[in-house]
Length: 57
Image (cartoon, rainbow, N blue to C red; front, side):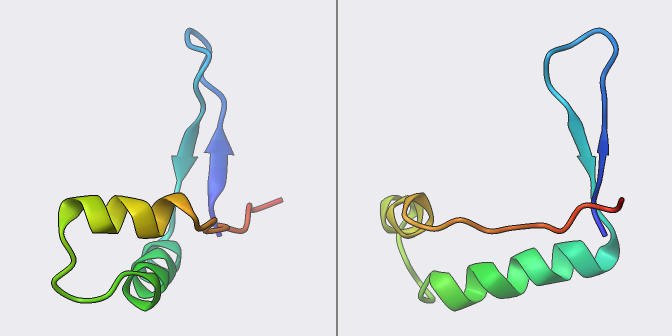
C-alpha cells in the first residue's frame, strides 16, 4: 500500500509506493496505452485516465 509522507519544508507531499503498487501502476499503464504509441499519443491516453493508488491507513 502507498504511504503519503508529509514534507515539512515544502507544499508537496511524497508518496512512498510498495513493489506491488508499482507493479499495479505499470499493469494499468500497459492496459491503457497501446504498444508502440508515440509520446503524444501516450500523453493523450493518460490525460483521460485516473490511476488510483490505495493509501496505507
